[in-house]
Image (tube, rainbow, N blue to C red; front, side, top):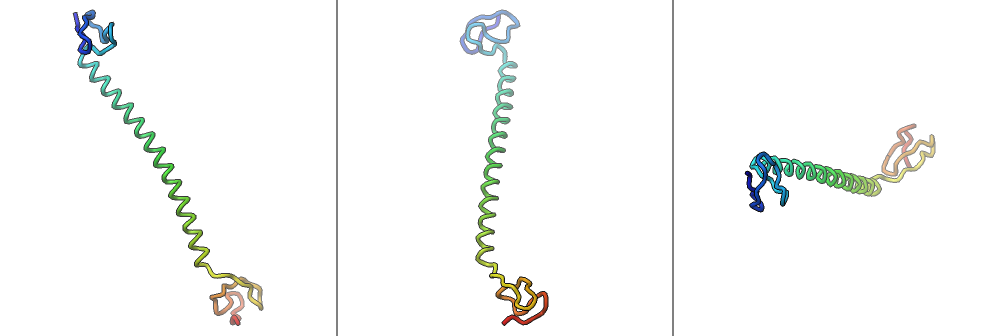
Length: 104
């Protein structure tokens, strides 16, 4: 006769689970259940962590792109066509990079 650790009811020899409450009858079964629960909790945590990490990475990448775009708009000088060759030159350039003409 094996007695349940949970409810104290007697069960048949060799039974793994209590017929009355469904509790584990051996320490080995309790250990296996603990390991299974730990493994499931770990898998769930890893999945949740991975999803949250991916979401956070996407948000950070979007924010970084917006910041770079914003800085680029503020830092990049306006471009104008060279009056001689038509190549794009920036208003901060002294000479045209295409024909060498001095900017007026």
